[in-house]
Image (tube, rainbow, N blue to C red; front, side):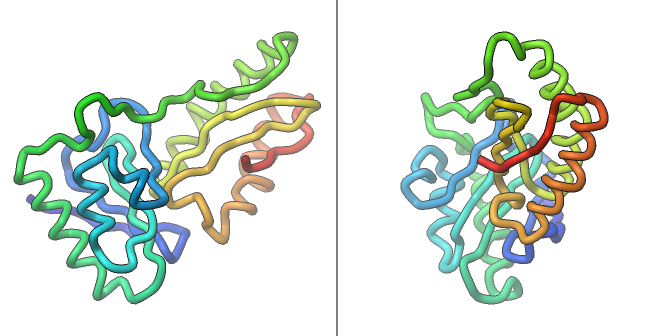
Length: 186
């Protein structure tokens, strides 16, 4: 088994690509050991000293470190991922499901058409680019011209996430949806 690693814009996060599916639907962002209880692989990764976050995408895993150097932590993470896949144990424990888009959304029913356009732009133009960087971004709400987005994985806590939101995503949405005034993280 060959696991690729890629740097992300967040220096505290590395992206691991096992060459096999990770989640068939949705994503899963685990920021602590309690959240990791949903996944045997996440629990194994949190057993490694200085692992402070684990994110599962469709075909990648991002790991965020709390401190230390990647050259010490990375081999342990690679070993844990490889051992997990070789064991044949599922990524999620029985009965657990990944988060999908559409959870806890808020917007006025009168804005449904605008929201549909915003969601389509996020799904087709933003999410694929963000996934390349080891993260995910999902629509959470729309109110008074403000789009609220949730950033996960490598994007959560990334130094460049503010620039991504305000310059990239905000400009894109304003271009296609004139009544968007601002984009904010939630």
